[in-house]
Length: 357
Image (cartoon, rainbow, N blue to C red; front, side):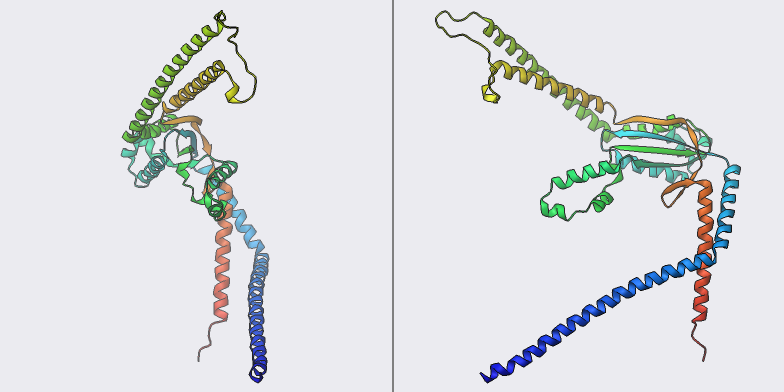
């Protein structure tokens, strides 16, 4: 009894210390988080005053950048751009993207002769090409539909671990069926001919040609088999109709008739079942004919904007195409801001340099 009574104060002390340690840990955590937000706030305030103090210099540099951009835009020769939208009937995306990268590589290496042979251009016209690009044609709504379809095939546990942004990030761009190819050039070459050669270089690939031949043969054989079944179905319908239209059996009082009573399949007449089968076969033939039409081309060229190209006055900046003048305005502001920020940092280091002994 005495031992039990003596152990209680010790246990109370241990629990008290434990709660005190937990409280101290939470206090330190709150202070740490608060200090982070405080430092961010101080940095933001410092940046505001830094910009405010040098607003005139930044304004002048931006204005000069705009003037320089305008002058360059007016003095430099124009760049022309043309785009082509395509639909891939086979999984040609990876080859297509590799081809575009290959063409850009030839431009970078100034191998105009080989590039001209591939695109059907003279060496002189090839030298004027600025670059090639390709990107998928897809909307956010289409991404959302794809995501919902994807997680719908998974169990609830696996689906709960997949986030929409991560899913979109991991989709290969070349996997999308619809793509847009663009070409930039300093002159107006035969853009339509260049696009045709780019597509033709993919369509003449032995692998895709073989896949196309196999698919077309399979569809044609399936269509032929269905047409035979349809002919047999038509023959059965005619036979059954003759039986129904024949006079009633004089040996019995029964009559052969047609009834459509009831909504269940088991209650429908044989004639209706034959008719339904006939419709289904015809629908399958229409579907196969559509598939055969799609398989005629490995890649379909849907639409081409301006076969002669249109004047393009944009420049890529951080993945965005912005007007030439705005690009130089932003560039001037960025350079001046970074230089002033670097100078401020060097001044800070000089002021806090350890004193010499």
